Length: 433
Image (cartoon, rainbow, N blue to C red; front, side, top):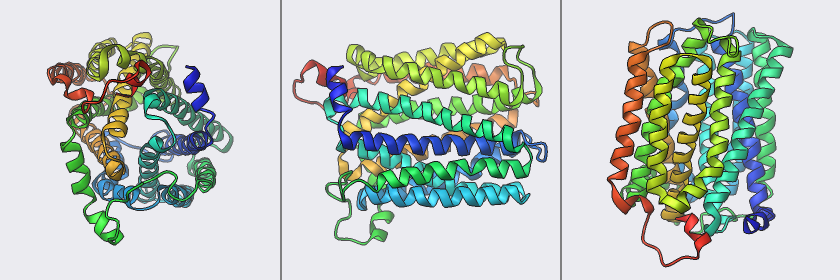
């Protein structure tokens, strides 16, 4: 712990953390404002397929282009990417606010929001790929946990800012447009801090496609990213676990977005914005807990045991949703937050420690593509079978079974989950494996 405290005083690490915090506050403020504007806006009405279509417009285009765009992170100076993409995100948020405030149709708002989402995902991949340049490998698990925990907290803070602004400016189109602008302010702050890094301080040390044009690097980005994943079993296996979690999370997302609009989940939860906020907060609490427990579990049981345990916990949590009562739903949300964040942290460590820096940005972009594509596919699948009230017993049972099957498969995958063979390490260094 003393080593971690001393490392956290490193200026480069703290500046990168600051970029992440402001970036996630921007994400939280924008995402919450957009959700409030479309799902809980008296001027707009949405059904399950419309919600699924909205997620598809926001996430799928970047999922298709992300692995190519990820080549920018391994070809250009990552400092420049974090600076200019954050500024572009601020401009895009303003466009969304104008579209919402002028009562533009949903598809216009979502098309503008698509640019915001693409910028956000590219920034997130850039931050993850840059971390090994300012953090020692022996403490990468702990530092990831700290970054992810505080970042998730800032996501919630950003959402809270939007919730307060929604009360001040109102829930109609005009008020929604004003609320959205908070995301632009935080994005500009992140860009200014990113500008303080030296050239190439965040990598890549050996640019992929060096000596070639950016067009050459981008065209080859997908192939390089996929090949890098395929050649490292520890990363490929963890991406499979992440994909499973996102599939189930997609089921749950649509189910509860519909459920809180049609059902009072008891006095403690209520409905609409209040209910979805409490459920989201519970998931965030679970992620916070996972930040403390994951390093300990990795040290005791390795990545394989940690991921398997997380997926088993997810299976149990899904079954708890069958009660459809406030207390079990909130407890299940916490457990799902623990499960998902544990798998995510193990995946980040695998990509940061087992993938060469020249391809790391592209691999994180491939992860984003898997995340978003599976998530959207799950929402569309759920939209075809879910009842208008949102509560679906078959979806919950399928989700629990998928968690269990994924855990069983990963447990049977052997030591491949642990990453490439490494020399004997000091006990604290085992955490980075």
